[in-house]
Length: 211
Ligand code: ADP
Ligand code: MG
Ligand code: MG
Image (tube, rainbow, N blue to C red):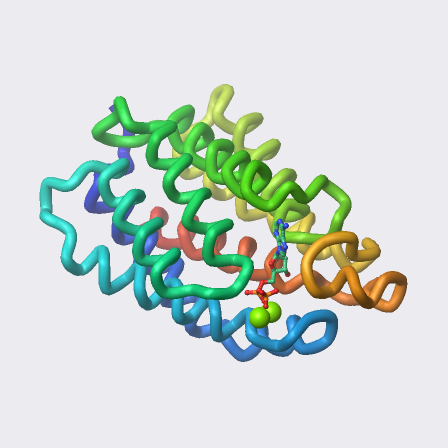
C-alpha cells in the first residue's frame, strides 16, 4: 500500500530541486555569514544534476533505483562537503525502502530516518554541532511520531515542521563542524545554511505531495 508511487516520489524530488534553486541566493547568503558563501550554488548544482538524472529515469524505475540515480548524480556534480553527505543520504534512504513499490507513512518515515543516518555516518556530526543534522533530527523524530497513526501527508508535514524548528534553533548553537567551526562563538546568532536547505527540501516534498 501507500500513496507515494515511484512517479509521485520523483515529482517530490523534482519539486525539492525547484525550491532549492529558487532559494539559492538565500542559502548562499546564510553561508556567506558563517562559511564560504557557496551553499546555494553547490545545492543548485547538485539538485540540477538530480533533476536531469530523474528526467532520464525509466517510467517503471523503483524508488530505490531512483535514489541510487540521485546519489550518483549528486556525488558526481558536487565537490563541496555536502556532495558525499547527500549522496550517502539518498543511497541509504533508497535501500531502506528497497522492498517497497509505493511508500506508506511508515516507509516514508523509514526513508527519512535512513537519510539522516547516512548523513550522520558519513559526516560524523553530532546533534548540537550546528549542521544540517540539527534540522534532520527533529524532522525525523516528528516524522516517526506521525507515522504511528498518521498518513503519508501527516509524516512529511511533521518532518517539514520539525526541520523548521530545528533550523531556527541552529542560530543559538556554536559551530563544531565544517567551515563555520573556525568562527567558534562568532557563529552564534546565525542559522546554519545546511539546516536551512534541509527545511527547504522537506517543505518542497510536503507541498508536492499535497497535489
Ligand atoms: P562547504 O562547507 O564545503 O562549502 P556547503 O557550503 O555546500 O559546503 O555546505 C555547508 C553545510 O554542510 C553546513 O551548513 C552544514 O550544515 C553541512 N555540514 C558541514 N559539515 C558537516 C558534517 N560533518 N555533517 C553534517 N553536515 C555538515
Ligand atoms: Mg560553503
Ligand atoms: Mg565550499
